[in-house]
Amino acid sequence: MKILLKRIGKIVGYFLALLGLYILAGLLVPFIEVNKSTNYRSPKDVTIFISTNGVHTDIVMPVKTPIMDWNKYVRYEDTDLKDSTYPYVGIGWGDKGFYLQTPNWSDLKFSVALRAMTGLSSAAIHATFYKSISEDSVTVPLHITNQDYQYLIRYMLNSFDLNATGQSIHIPSTHDGYGNMDAFYEATGSYSQIHTCNTWANNGLKAAHQKAALWTLLKDGIFRHYQK
Image 1: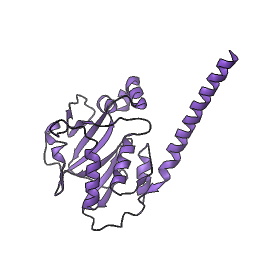
Image 2: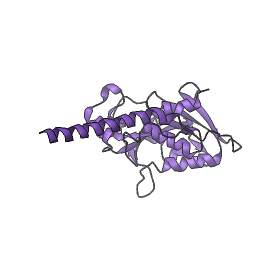
Image 3: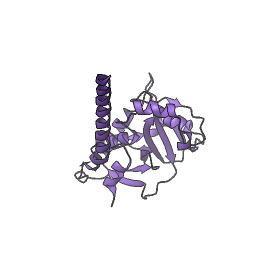
Image 4: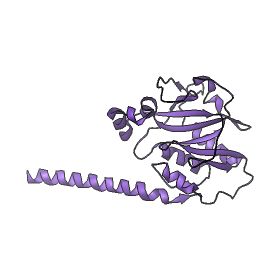
């Protein structure tokens, strides 16, 4: 019995140590900034935005530029309103169960949270079209080169799960918790406690040579590097 209790104690101790390291890393690593200087290239050709609803971070871009037409992958026709006059689109990546079954925190189910925490759920792309973008505390503009924008495009397209003909796969949503210019698509990868929606957005900024955290779980790890 004593041997069993010692083994259980060791397992609990290892778990608590790992949990402590995880929390410590989550608090400290986001302060480590990469790509501190974003002015080494010119001109600045495209304006994109990082935007948050307080939990998720999206990257907002012009729907159409000379080098990319996002409507080929996130389509106006997949939204409820189907209004093609919206010139901006925000794209985020995250857990499919959270996106489709939890538009509000009050809708969260234990089964959805458990699958997301363990990485057992699939992922989805969430696209939101915007009529206009205003700079504020939760929306920050970034002026980048066409080359860096192409790096960002490549990174984001690799997150789409495409069908045999190279088209994105629309996921119908029946929830009323989203706007009438939102759409969902199948995505690659899986959400976990190491790789969250904010980790995905942060990695996109790194791919585009923009300021970012070395690693982050939360949106604060991104936005603190853009505080004036």
